[in-house]
Length: 99
Image (cartoon, rainbow, N blue to C red; front, side, top):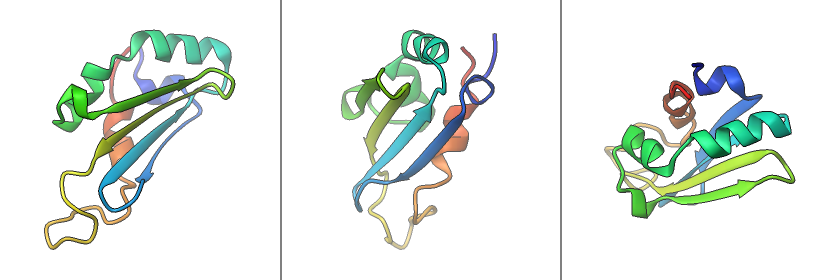
């Protein structure tokens, strides 16, 4: 068993507008992509972020060896209680998932 960040080339999170976040998992190889795509469920990702599974959008892009998730931001970007204005810290949370 290994954590996600050790398996892939890069995990990046960022804003996808003021209401959405996107998390990109760059797998680097087809083998890593197959392992991530088959082993990382949308429900596990939703649980890490405290979101409802049906609110996440998942995109598996084998041509690029990328798995991408988009989810609603818990607060609108720039709101007084927004703790991550650029959405960059969310990648650290998903990197700890063990596959």
